[in-house]
Length: 618
Image 1 (cartoon, rainbow, N blue to C red):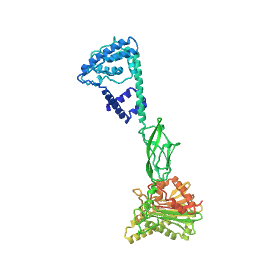
Image 2 (cartoon, helix red, strand yellow):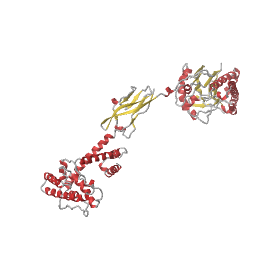
Image 3 (cartoon, rainbow, N blue to C red):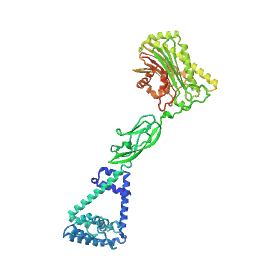
Image 4 (tube, rainbow, N blue to C red):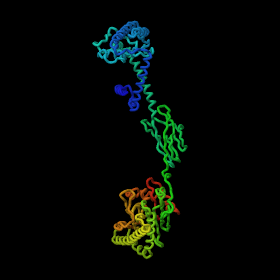
């Protein structure tokens, strides 16, 4: 079969003008070339079987050398008789001479040839190879193909066309090993150009007809292996997909028949105008649909598979923690403080990872509005997921923050603080402003340190009571102390761990903490005694004129929204976040709305979520 593939390639290369480029490329395709070779072999086998039915005995290898000269002599006598007949005129007598010449073309085995033998094929296909073999004295090779007279059924038109050639005896040179390699038929043809032209025209027409038939067969089979594909659908999401052709075919040639599409799910249909599959899948499944398409003026049928992916949210389980555990905590919590100038809203909810595992919420928060003042305290704590009692550690931290600032922010203290803030010039670098900032920072440093020590002591006390390591209560801590004045807002912050504290305005974002990251994703620092050595670096202070809100959140919200620490500095992301929150802040039950909002789904982010917002009213 490999030899036929090489011959096909050579024929196409040597006869480029006879075949279109598209046809040649198609035949040389890595899948079609072997198939064509198999087809040629099968046709050849069928031809041999047909010849064998004529009961023609093939000469043996030993007798070929002796039979060839004798057959050539007989052929010469036949040509002489044809020449004599042609002197009288046209095709009728030529046709009779053809019969007489056939009567003389008898093999040594006394085989009778059919009357409709194709002399063109006989001379050109058989005599020339024999003559060439004799000329080169190559009688030692098997000559079965050369001696075969190629007897086939040929119609009368073919015989007439062939007999129209007018051979001349005068120029007929007997074939021998010493003579020219030109065959008798070639010599005859050279003496009768008209007959040669007729024969060549007939052969060219027949060749073109055969080429077109073969090309049409392969053109039809070209589209049998078209492969289609569509995009995956998702439950609960509108679906629209083009039918993609993934095999090597031109999509522009294909048009789908709309009413032929058959879907096992009624949620899907085919839109003829857009040539797309559309639907609203309600359940996850995988199915096969059928359809018809037109190509090259043919209508064909096909099938394709469509996969409907389940809504990831539906795969999450919601399990309750085992009963009787220490430090049980509600799965959600919310709170809101509404004042004349602003609202303070906070909410916290158990993450999907905790719901799926049947564990408690580890986050906690507290919000405080000091009575008869413009001072507020926001706090959020995120218990370490790997610590068994971190939910209690976060609760202890949030509770102590609230209690300590209630004790610190007395009316007298507030009066002193307010007096200092009145002298703070926003944006000024004057010495007086810097002295006030340093003084306020020192005062809050003392309060934060007392809070820090109180939390550590309380955690260690709990750990001693349970005879466990204090690390099982590990938690982060975010604190923002805010004073809302008429023309400015003051804020002092303290942070340990990840999460974010930010002062947002339409034109700016001011980060008031530096998140602690670990060596790996999700790692951070927690409150422990080592924090004392770097305590000063964890405080920030500021006074700003243009603010819309102060936002404080654990990493369960900051990570899916901002993704990276650099993302926290992206003002556009904060704008999008505020655009989502602002409408929620304006409704009466803003805390409930915030709690529902933070149940958003982001793949890969399923931790507890806690957020506290001081939102300035318009």
